[in-house]
Length: 241
Ligand SMILES: [Zn+2]
Image (cartoon, rainbow, N blue to C red):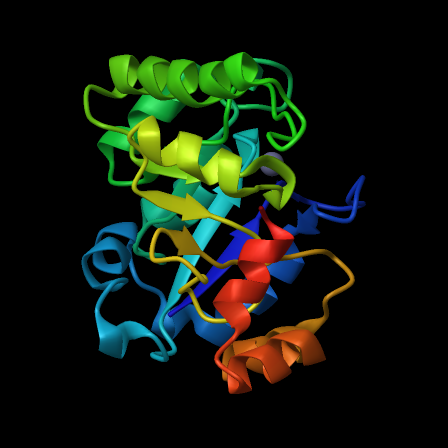
């Protein structure tokens, strides 16, 4: 399976590289609409050995932007045009300008959107103290769980930054699925890590087509060589220790 990671969607003039126009998102959607799976289907199948190279596509959105609610949910999820998505929320941002309110998060959560934590303050978790790391992971989780009334077991690393210390703490906090922004099919180098393509607005339709056809093809020589030698996991452990 292939996991895509979007951020804010706007009508025009994206203010940063991670923000896409509605038109670009529509163009992407036209490429993979038939392959989309719901978060529930993804979670039921993501550990199955045969799920590895299926071309199914899961949509994820980070940072709790208002457009998750006003655009993705209202225009697509409620009409059945997309079978759902994951929304990763930095809890400190809830209700601030341009971000969803608690009521919106509760509503989309009730309607089948899978809500995950993106920490509290969108901190680079590789740089914070142990106490701060624990707070980012556990307080965000419990606040989301209190509001949603169910366990929150999905976590996306802010900025995609993580290390062994960070993933150990996330697992200890009770998260089961940790989402990175590494290239390739959905399975990361550990069974609890899930790779995603982080979309930027300089990735054109051709790039997207190529990624959907062969997400591993976009990976660099270090991945190709170490995978061939069976050393990729060890290499990643050195990199993320
Ligand atoms: Zn983020």
